[in-house]
Image (cartoon, rainbow, N blue to C red):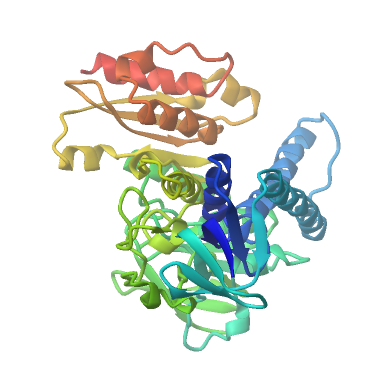
Length: 455
């Protein structure tokens, strides 16, 4: 029986990050993956979604330049060619993951693992494997909803949308995602940009539940400007072969076009095939862990979506690095409160930390500042004419509690904001930050200055 220092089950972002960290710290590491290293993020979710959205957004920008007479471009977005570009770039990124694992001498084992005891794994197609520490990173599985009267083949998961050669004439996107984030909105945006008639439906009170209400209203109106019909606090039901019935909270009903139903979000933690009970690991709907990513069994860790909570790739990577360090004797701890969220809609929408309402409910004496990107030079340069950035801070001690952005470069803004919050840099220092000009991050500094002035 082969023995390793650390065995990782699952090759997605949480798993490969854990394996790379443990190997970096000198451990002999084996990573067991049933399909391909890279996981859902690289092959089915974040990466292919972003590639397709980038293609669609580039086409949108080119059409605007065409209107301005800079150059000529056709009106039709070629979904099939965008999908082919997606396949090429996904392969390239997957090769990068494999290359990093080879460089760190991580042994990649193809197969499915299950526990024989707390230190021993049965692996399909080979002898058992014994490990000093084991990290579970098996992620989630999509569970497309059952809508009575709607044929299952009409309900598309994320990877089914990515494989389309032609955009459908109409689509209804279900937008009730985990972690206050709906990737259904990204697919609604993608299809709207490709010429599809799109409806977005959420059962929540707001389509952007984690975003500051002022920015959420702005972003929701931007979706409508893109041609997306938005229904909040609503549900869907069968109506016809090409339509759905949307029922709002007040009982009113409306028929919407829906040749397909996009269900990019519904998923659940996947670990039932691991026989965790044999290892003595306590489970429920998820695998509970502490801030060390440790289960109730000291040498068994779990990371990423399988633990529930913030089901985001950046959270999984962070947890993987923590678990990889601790599995080799380290003392790292997670900091998931300050993990940034981002949606690649039009405009981009992102946030990190608390909303003003949540900060007040937590007992903070809140100061806020808002910046209007209508006057931001970089936003104007890239052709975006609207956007907002809001900073939420503690009035007395100047702690930055949250940052919310809706507009061009929101990803840039939220990345800087997350760095500020994770490093515990005070509001006064953020307000004095020297950024690049012209840059959207100048709006973040402006919002911080206004919050500082309001203290």
